[in-house]
Length: 221
Figure 1 (cartoon, rainbow, N blue to C red):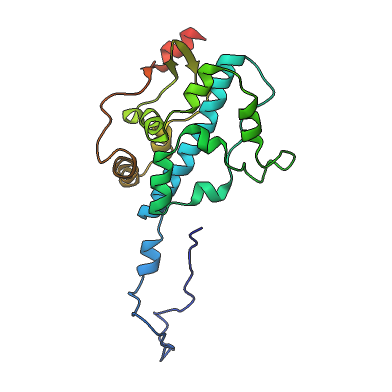
Figure 2 (tube, rainbow, N blue to C red):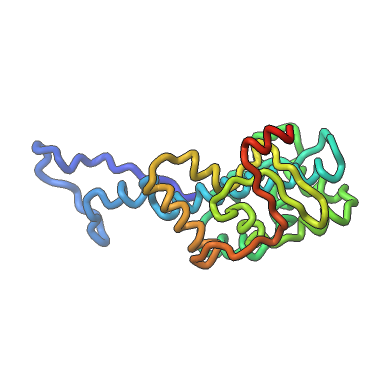
């Protein structure tokens, strides 16, 4: 896990005549602070990845509810370490893997009363061919659905079954809405495109999607 390092040396202290020199390349003033700011590329990637993986788990629960109806059994969020790793190899691995690969990971340690492979155990009990096919979807393709050209998404249809997304199943649109800073929003968009979409907006969707307005949603309720 990448951690922020704090520098306790005050470069503006007029009473400080000398600074202890360290071996290696000289550090540029304020470089660390700028590099590890909220707009930093790695931090933006991390926020997108965490948001996407939470979306993935919630989406799987919505699909589970679609096929089985109400159930006390749900998939749990995955462990923090898997979410936070944003190095190059891990990003490529995430894009090449499928939903089922994520569900096989250890769950978050906050679910103390559950087996650490609770999602994998639940997955092994599912006998639905429709769900099994859905869970084989590549994560790079799922990200296109999550991104949805930055639009809100309330429901999708996969193999003639309509999946209603719960309020906590938040697509990329809601990540942008949560951040009011226009520059940061643009960084989210650019990073999502460059890391997951090969620098482009999507030209279609692996699902038959239906975007509905808030007024239309209220009428349906």
